Length: 101
Image 1 (cartoon, helix red, strand yellow):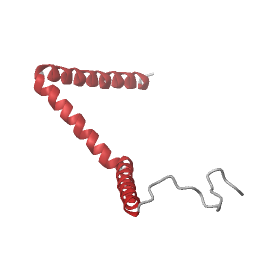
Image 2: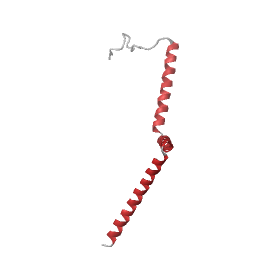
Image 3: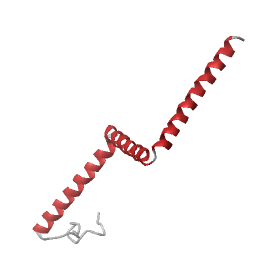
Image 4: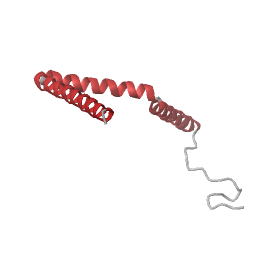
C-alpha cells in the first residue's frame, strides 16, 4: 500500500511548517477560522433572529420612504384599503347571489 505522497518510510510527507511555533500559529489561525465559520453557520440557522432582522430592515425602508414622500405613501395606503373594501364587497355580492339561486 504505497502512496505517491508517502516517503520511503511509509510516512506521508508534510508540506506545512516544521517549526513548533509556526505549527502552533497555524493551529491557532485554523481554530479562529473554524470559530468564525461556526458563528456564521449558527447565524444562518437561527431563523427567528434572521426574520427579526428582515422585519427591522423592511420597517426601516418603509420609514425612509414615508419620510421622503408622505403624501404618496398615504395615497398608496388608501388605494390598498379601497381595493380591499372592493374585494370584500364583490365577495359578499357573489355569496348573496349564490344563496338566492
